[in-house]
Length: 277
Ligand SMILES: [Zn+2]
Image 1: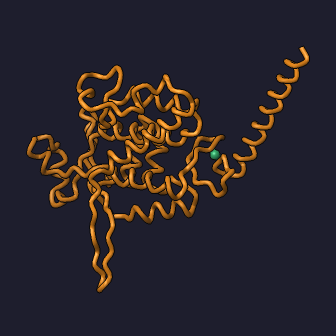
Image 2: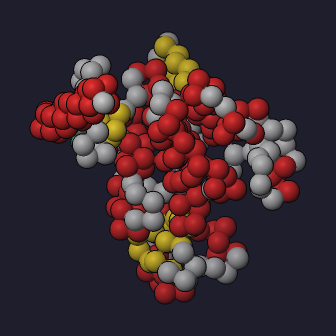
Image 3: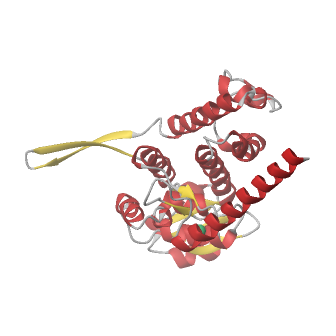
């Protein structure tokens, strides 16, 4: 989309939908180039929380997470009149993005993705889990949670989020997978099946209703096709070429290997000192 008018006090961006693009092709390109930033879900994961400039670039490149068209809003008189003039003749392509909603969705996807990324490391998992806990009310995920306002208590507690902090490492790792599963099933629950007729050929497929759903769909696909990793040197997301790849490129891999080696040597020396004393 092309952002046309930013209503800062209200946190609303008005824009115009531009060209259509093929999200599946973006995901294929991301895999081919081992770079998740080519795909909307990788780019959304990589975006830093609260980075307004980055959010605008994301919207320009991939479009709004959900398409809220203008007639809904013009009825509520919230359509800025400066814009009405500019948009004449272009009404059908006008969209409205509520940035509070954008950032709610962002923290949800980012933290759940981080929880999934660190699922084999109970210690590393605690950071994103804490952030998710603190922002639970923004996620749109249902479930009772200790310390939350009563609105969130009306649904039965998923057993895996009630007492994470009292669990051992193994259970924490399981809880991470449960949480990712919980989110995927929640956000993809109304995925619509479609069919396509080509001559005598018929194909059935599911089609997400929005970019937001597509992001979760791509995330789910990645768990089968091989998920991205986070570079141990620069924190960038990448699809590994080999199983033992810890960094996004060879330069970062060398740097990291050297650092790891030094760390191991220090640990060994400290161990030896301890034993001799
Ligand atoms: Zn890197």
